Image (spheres, one colour):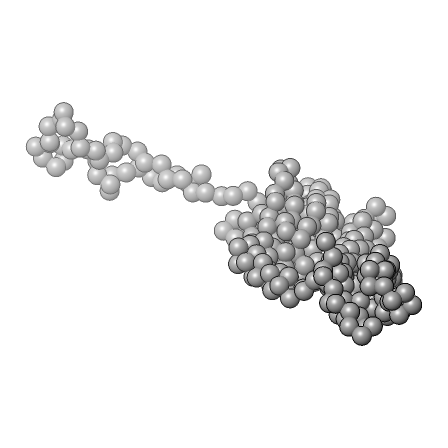
Length: 358
């Protein structure tokens, strides 16, 4: 039922319940019923249609603007990290899938902005339509505010997950295809939502992690990666010779056509990393494309092992010293009588046999 109009007085309609068209019809017909009919069948529907058309037009313009920003953002290089350099070109050529994450992130941000703006437009236009029908929207606004506060208190974890997901997307902490370490879970990211992140570990287990519970993120595949190999050698080896052999082997891998695009810079031999009880550890590092550090490491290990075998260089085994005792152990037996003289008893610890290291 339409709201009741204020009675006409002196040929004028109440300005709160009508418009110029209704006033014009009343002036022409001098009929209150006809004016009210025009008001509810023509004027107000036309005003509502105008609101809807205006909202759709604004939404279309803003969505076009967001699409242009997303397209521009998806085509650039990573800001502040990778510019249009030779290294960047090698990264794109070596692993184009990893760099699709930038386009995916831009599209996700664009979709999120579109959804937020559409929700705002729908809410505003809905209140304007209700007001156009002559109803008081004050109680609706108050009820919406109270409902929002109640939802905020009752769904704090959900709000926290949503806000964390928004910031993760905007800050580009990780993307689909990245290998990450989240608290106690690590694996490859399969999907990123505003509430949960889905990743699969090396055993094939799928993990669902709420965004609000993520306190730290370690990304092992963003922009570039590094292969770090610690090679143990015997204490008797010539370290200068070892460093030369490792550098030569790594350079051969860098020059290989199958791996040249995966290794971004010249390999480096950092030298002695530490002294272990069984060996001296020498470190070799290579800067690689994202997600390729493990593939490069496996190949380099095989080549180093083959080279060491060819040159007779020892990769030491763990060494242990074992002491063997001879004679009866000192154990009290309840069924045996104690010796009458100390010399008659079993050999003490000073009479043990010689130690034999093995």
